[in-house]
Image 1 (cartoon, one colour):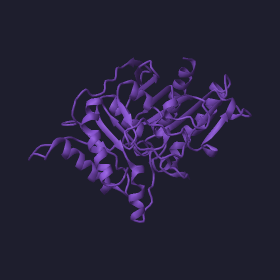
Image 2: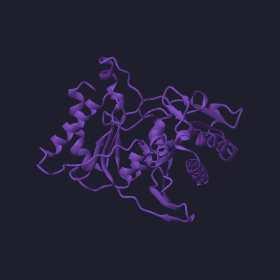
Image 3: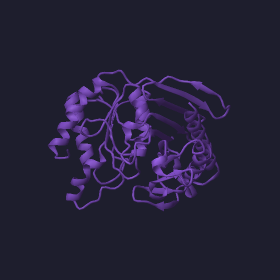
Length: 332
């Protein structure tokens, strides 16, 4: 509980600092490129949270026990705290995305999220399934005064609150994934955020929907899609019952793009899905592209494909169609 309280306090500080920066800085200043890294572009707005992160973990958490902090922007993608401690001595591995959804937030289009997963230190091979505590906190738009925060411990269910940043009050909320047995009339999407393989991803999307629901009827819509450029946000949409099926298959496109002489580009990384435990505790089914549990090693480099189904009925409807579409294209 003490570790949970510390992480919640960290999230609250990051949320407030980023909102304050958004309120006081111009769009041009926030969207300026601070650094180019192998896995992503670091914008000026990212620096606000990164500076807070290391200082807080060192001061509030690592004074009690050594930890390995894993996050983008750190030298080598990780740091052992307190200074001088050895990685083998660490009790926990804490993986953090201080701002997931930077692009949407800096243009004030959509909320971003702070994501944290905590796993016992099982050495360099510690993976996503080892995470036993996860917390995610919404960074709302300037014009938005409510911010949701949700956390889970493995086997102990999920808790969530809605924070009113005007009054400082918190209200308990209850998240319920969709119980529908079909994607019909609901939100379902394959992520295709960036140029490169959007044609292939859209073709897979079309094939799945048509095979699941049949031909489109005149004047009707089978289902809808939402391209939320934020993996944590996509997970939250499943948690809240807004979405029924989401798939991010970008890493499977590498060979397809190579045949066209193109590079893969940016993909989801382990820190983007480090709160997957929360979805799982709510009964959401989250798998990799092969239908297996997500097991990426906790680092900042691995490219991650993931698929989320609101419930087992949706999985039974969509997963065979998805698998067939990927195999027919030699993507798995």
